[in-house]
Length: 236
Image (cartoon, rainbow, N blue to C red; front, side, top):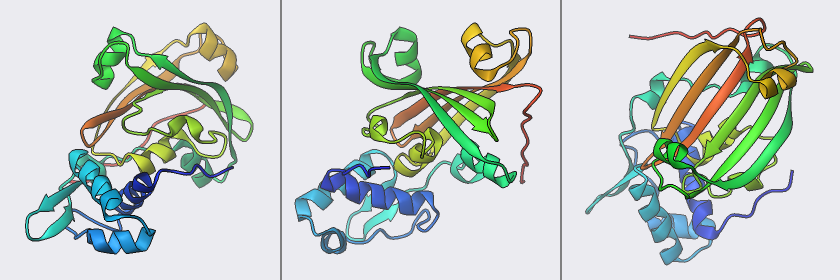
């Protein structure tokens, strides 16, 4: 996969976001000074300042007068809710994951989608439809809309190599999420791609993720009911 060359300030932002997402930096930890980041990336002070300002607006860092910049206190969801990547799930079971890309496009949000993403009606959004396989068997039909403000280069990635979930967790660290799971019959399109009958119930997860001030994505994830079950654990 060819690497996407980000603008200089986006490179700085991506680095800081990755440290937070991966747990290397936790809430209250100091972020390297602007001069240190300037030296690390070989960019201007103005470039670093823009990156840090945008991270602060997104709610990922807090600028403290006289004390520098620290990682913000993120919502508890970031440490208690596991937003699983289908690729990782399948590998953990010792099986092989593969992806077929069905749709990659930019479109204008209708009123309903705009409300969900907290955008104005007609705003441009990214849309992808993917089919995920486990050992060659279709296991998940993924229909996702992404807010360009949260992940401006989303359509440039190779979705056969990086799942949307993985990319968004890296580029738009999760600060809040909501989801619902219900049993539904598949649409004609979903049944065709999942290679099941329309009368076969599916488990459908609708998930909305938030990163800082932006609603990052809305996803509809459809699983054949006879091939998949949800599991998890709670910690008090």
